[in-house]
Length: 317
Ligand SMILES: Nc1nc2c(ncn2[C@@H]2O[C@H](COP(=O)(O)OP(=O)(O)OP(=O)(O)O)[C@@H](O)[C@H]2O)c(=O)[nH]1
Image (cartoon, rainbow, N blue to C red; front, top):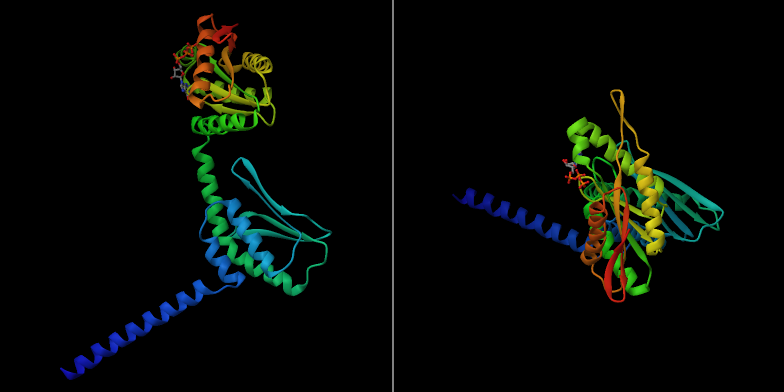
């Protein structure tokens, strides 16, 4: 009995000792104020690549002076670039890999050369960065997939909604002109019914390419619904937006999808609306949709614009 009590007592003492040691280790770690402990702590607080690299740059700057940090990585179908500071003639480059997978390239530059012990510090801190960096890259890919249409590989309706909100507020704050084009393939149901969904899918993919070709780098294209696409043109007024819509429609008219001994082709209708100050994303979208509706009613294969004349809204072909 006495032996049992002693071993129970010893076990409790050991448990308590472990707990105290863990507590002390945790307090020492969370209270430590060196770049290594801080980088460990801070890097685990975010899945944002941009924030993570900002944290890394801050902690690295506490450990050694550098002029510029540039990080580049191809994430899915987008290039991600983070850059901070001003460069110099001396540089060190790192290819960041974990378990054989590439997680981008990081380059540090400054005016004086890097010493051996400084390179060791950089490599040590990169060793801490790599796991959180992998998590952030994977998160960015998931986020990208959630905003991308799987068939056409262009941004989807969710991405359009986010863009409309952002562009409305930029216009309201800075008076920048944004024009929205809604573009819908004509009688697309007939294409599917006559030639099958696979041909329909090829046409949708070719339409996304035609949109890309007819627009500029700074313009944004989206698959809005089944056979409906949207384009947002920054710094563009209604008249120029209309021209772009016609160029897009001409591009779509030029698509030929081979099916047996036939070439399947399609036309498109478009509705164009420029954002008005104070207008909500839904109101802006509704005006473009209304213009598109009128283009369809006018016989399709044409562009209609929404605009205001003396306080009342009219459409023009
Ligand atoms: N192949 C294919 N078809 C799709 C996809 N998404 C939607 N559709 C088809 O697009 C067609 C849209 O038909 P409607 O809304 O009647 O429009 P429409 O036939 O183009 O007629 P209008 O727009 O009035 O000219 C339907 O047959 C949908 O099945 C897709 O991802 N792939």
